[in-house]
Length: 380
Image (cartoon, rainbow, N blue to C red; front, side, top):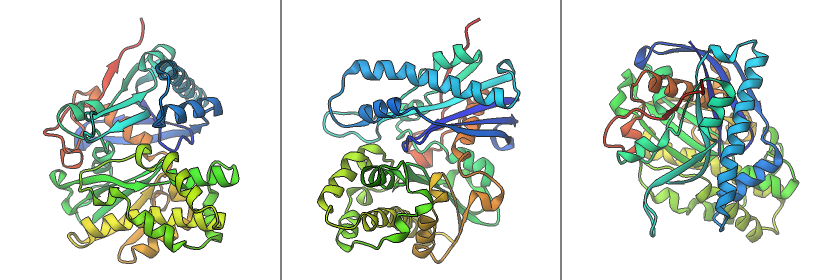
């Protein structure tokens, strides 16, 4: 059947929409990408999202309105891709929407309990696109004691488990996250967690220092050098002291943190700062691989996806930090680095559609496997 996956990540670089043909369920799932496109988020909406994700006091009416505005944007993105693909909306079995994360609290702190908030109103999407929408995937995992993330490991197990090799699937979006698949594809031994910053800090620095959205192909970073003092400060970030399973996001590595560092190191070269932040992403990945995989399992290779896969400087730094293993990107295998997470939600949505579980308790810390997502039916 035909299905659409929707993903708007922490990097805010756009709405990823993928059209797939999917058959089967559980380990027999087979999915084929038919079309994929990233639709730009208008600057005014991007500013509203950043404001809502900040740790400053914000008016509740802003989040209320933005929920519906993003629902409309997601719906228009789906309609645009279907039109481009000559597919009727009525032929889509379901749309699986991750939504836009506003805040994520994986562990209790102060007076706050573990909780999460993704917006992009499913009712708007269902009404506009005239099909079933599956959304809000994180909350059921948290209801049974999990951290609600990472969500993609189930899809990676379905697509990449190998009886002969231990494989790490590394995504580098706004945040970096990894799924480790041991040899023989033992589902109960899958390990997954967030490795730390992906493109988020790099993008924030490039936007502040150069007025650009991101460091295309790592061009600024490739002209810089490491700032030892900044590198040492970054290595002491509290996230590295946390044990797995763990997740993070804009609340730890967002603009507030990055801008404070830019202010502190403002006397250094712009490119040196960007290079050091790029190195930090590579370091955070390598740090966790060495701590959890390389010395405990015979890790053979790492396959990288997400926007960071197109940053040549970042990929070279990862290779330098991890000379023990083979480093590939999705394109080396004939897949799309950009579409990977949107496809993951098609697979998760398909599980929900068939009333089957799709969280990975060994990755999220949940007490049991559960069916993820909430279903919104279209108007008649």
